Image (cartoon, rainbow, N blue to C red; front, side, top):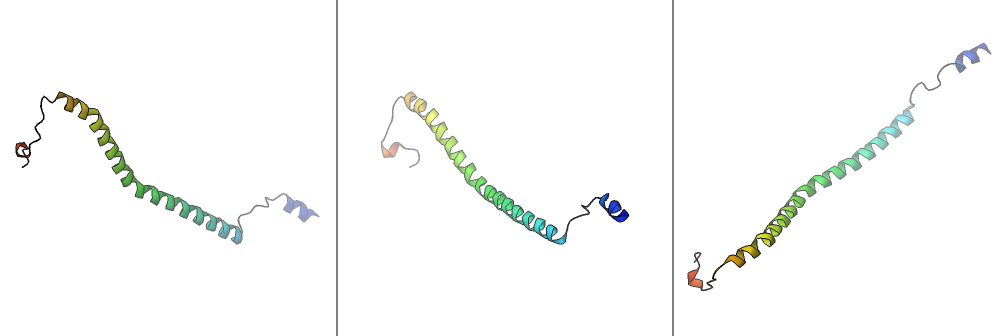
Length: 86
């Protein structure tokens, strides 16, 4: 009976078993691979998103400045020989 009293005073949580350790490593690997896949997808989409943002910004600039530029023109010459590009 005295041994039971001595053992009952000890902390029963001495560590992790091998099964618990393997399960935790497996869960950590699954979670890590999901996070890594999400990060890869985000990094692949950054260039596409930046390109679309730049196009949208250019379209906004055109819609802002083009009407004022067109209305300030005094005359428009549409003859092909009058264009400077050839």
